[in-house]
Length: 594
Ligand SMILES: [Mn+2]
Image (cartoon, rainbow, N blue to C red; front, side, top):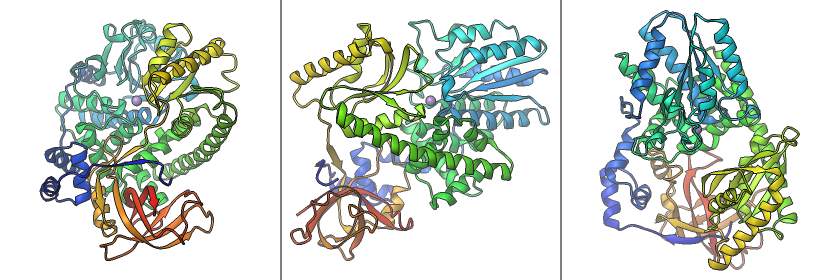
């Protein structure tokens, strides 16, 4: 914690800050952050107002009109069943929930009383992502045995690379597939089904709007279009923004203007009355009375995701779509328990992996390849994210389980917080036949490895990193620069500032403003009874009227000496005090005593 980061102050001009403050009616800290993030006043105002905005129209995604027309045609038929095929992560589950609630209510509005069966299929983790042979066989058999029923399969958050499966499905005359997805198409290997069924995916056309939509954002837009072709107002989709917000944040999509508005509108729904029943339970459980974007990222989405990771993807889907209060309570308790279990398991897995790597890998390798003995492979990517940050090397991690022990090809998660071009190196390895695939972003990507070639690949990666390092000094060190938006007094760490932090969905690419308290007097310091590395400091800026309390976690015990140090510089974000959520505190990112 102490003094690890390089602080870089980016305080904008007073005049500009004041313009933002008066036109947006916000404080100095939020204003400075918006300016540093290059967000115009008009853009910020648009996002802030999105909480009350009544109607959004669907984005003009390619094939969206055809998709809506196809659904309209099917819901008008007599003998018809709809099957929604989703994914087991937060985005997949919220996509399925949006489809469930959306389709049911739209059908009810267009054909009151008409009963169209809608089934949901959320594969479990061990089945793998996307359509699979078992599903194709089941559907083929079903369609074959019921020749008078017409089946419409709608994929959500998957399907754009499932051409072989869709081809088989559509061999049955009474099966039709509609793909809605946001993943990259794969034209090269002829896996993209655009020529055999209707596909809605913004990635099919780089010039299409909605490039940053999550899977749930795509199905949401399709349903909005369906409302339009059915001559309905957007009443149904209007009530589903909160699910769209959760899925969008859960998939960690870039928050462009459209996504910021979705999240803002969704947050408003999560916090307003009448509240969705499971959301109210979440409020009670967490003792938080107004969720922020950060709460979606760190509490709500993880609860949904953690069930899928431990092999219970159906529970959160049922929770999100259940209608009976008693059933909702039951499902919520179950989901929350799995979430807690997941947290404990993840913590333990992180600790063990870190220890093992530090003892047995770090001296031998520049690019860590780590086979992890883990009960729940779903936790591997979370462990990888943690290790990428802490070990300071690029890392590929995969789960070694009983299930995959015999498999020739295994999937792994790669993370890279260094300046090493890890993805480029892996792609070169794929071209050299040492690995199967590498896809994603430089900081986080997925790989498929050939078990027999792992030793060779390891040698290759170590060599490549070595070569790169010799050309680029310091490439393997993690970038520790921390941008500070604004210098502040301890007096400004107050509930007004805290209120500003809730006016806008600060998260991801628009993070909470980073403030710096300079030259504060240390009035007192008190260690936690449970852990002497956690200390509550009472500090006061030179010109402030009140001292404030801030907790600092995991402080190196030799860093602070009360006989020597009397002052401190701190950087951090203004957040709820965990002891008393109504009050503001500084969540300290780094500090320096003197
Ligand atoms: Mn997704």
